[in-house]
Length: 67
Image 1 (cartoon, rainbow, N blue to C red):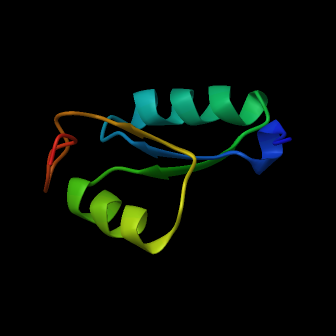
Image 2 (image 1 turned 90 degrees about the horizontal axis):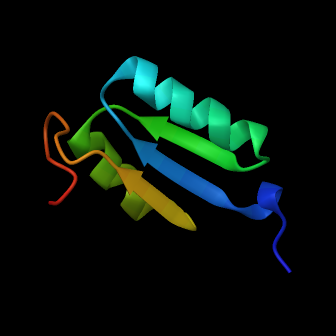
Image 3 (image 1 turned 180 degrees about the vertical axis):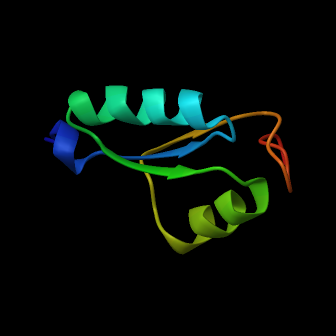
């Protein structure tokens, strides 16, 4: 059984306020969260580490969330 602290979530959001709000909400819920603000950096990080869930902004700089 996985507990919230065992769930690793990746968030790619270039709007600082929105990204920080999402991260704070997920941290308060007990999840482990990593935040990134650039599409290219997000793509690289997603290949480096495994996450249980990725939340991607569609309009990221560098590479959009659909790519």
